[in-house]
Length: 210
Image (spheres, rainbow, N blue to C red):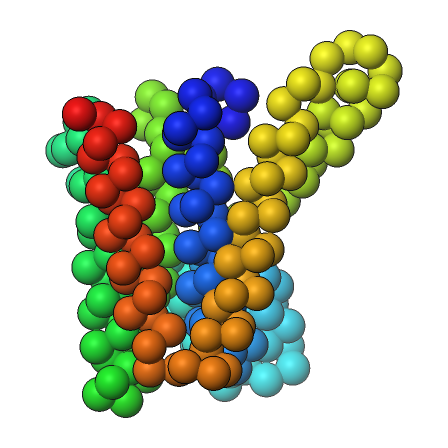
């Protein structure tokens, strides 16, 4: 986070909030599995394989879909070049709109598939030399860097960037709160909000590039 300018940090925080928002909606609709947090799904897969093998297909499919979303987003990012951020975010917006439409048709499997593809693709928004520079759908690394930065600050050896990692984590956490509220109170509209959110981020990213 320290290596990007302030406007891109804000974009990253808003994108992480989108990931938290969508993951909360997916979590509530997918029997407590995740559409963006694959570490959690991997643990659930391992537990299901031992305790209820017939349930392991769902976390396994979600993991595969996430990988496919990252793969497709990476190809698009490579093709888009300098326009990578708006291109990837437009793809995410389209997938989320498709998921919202699938929800209206009560096509649950299609909705989950499109959600996990969108969250996988989202991680290609911030890249450096073809690799993810800021993870948007997982926060373990951000919390590790936050703690390391605070320790370095206390030891007097640096650590000036800890606040950026805290804000990134807060973005995802507050997004999850908003997603849970939306899913429970306005289930048919919740994902349309996510699609519009992604579209707004794409517009902001386009303006940054231009």
